Length: 194
Image (cartoon, rainbow, N blue to C red; front, side, top):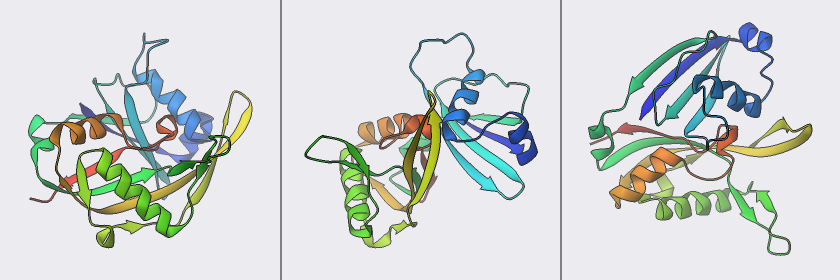
């Protein structure tokens, strides 16, 4: 696995006509040429850093460096995922399915957001103490895909997690958590605590 930091100033982003998370997804594919029709094998998150935009990308292979932005790829050591406790950050699109038509709906209520992160932890091989988890206010993010406008609910979760199933945890790190991964959600950012 590789973690790549990509930095661009906002005028460069405007020149590249990157207007939303889906446009970022399409642009990041340029780092993996010759893979038309293949399944996406990278996760990313976009952070506004004042006059710059910082994109963090986690990929299964080292990316090529397109001729835009400043790219800093670093391999992730196998030992990085062998700790028992981590500080974590997760930008997610927490959703639930409506019973009547199975439509996916964003979650806005604080108590349901705590339930969502607890459920995802249980499914992905780690424990969180919800009293130690900080949850940001939900923010609506809009995008255009195939000439249709859509919306996701962005929520940042931060806290401490303890690994209880190493295989499931590594899979969650590699593949992401939750929905809308092609839109910059689901990448589990980790810092070893033990």
